[in-house]
Image (tube, rainbow, N blue to C red; front, side):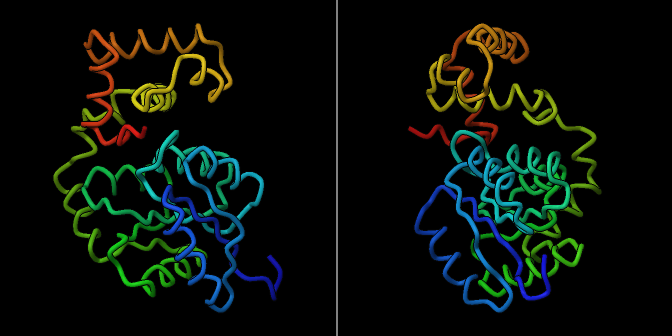
Length: 221
């Protein structure tokens, strides 16, 4: 990053109007430039790879690949990129899983815009920013040992199994899922059978119900 160039930002949110509104506001901030927009998690990972932004503003509830999984993939591949969750979710599991995935900031969508600006400036200075609305949740979670006694989808399933489950829950065919993940249809069929065995369910409908109940997807049409 040059001395004149600003903070390069990628916005990932499945609502176009949200991306455009946040983008317009951020582009008016001194030293900030929105260089890309992604409508789902998989696109966010690809654009982070291509654009090498300083900061990714990441929604959690997105189709194809949710924000938690997208954050994990981005941080694994590009550890210098900072991710800030900007989401309607403020439940303990979402906050803790985003932080475990490598996010540096967490801001609810109900916050004032200047709080997001503050979060961006904090994370590019290698600090963590947790909105006051969620910081208590995190402390409480660790005090109560949530992460030690966790039987959620994030501890029961592997990252790849969660990816496959989200795509199945969103109604993607075996062929489409295989193409999305660059694997064979046989591999997807194997993952599906493993998911059913691991979760003790007998049908795809039950897999969908589990994925929704765990907040892995909203079952986008």
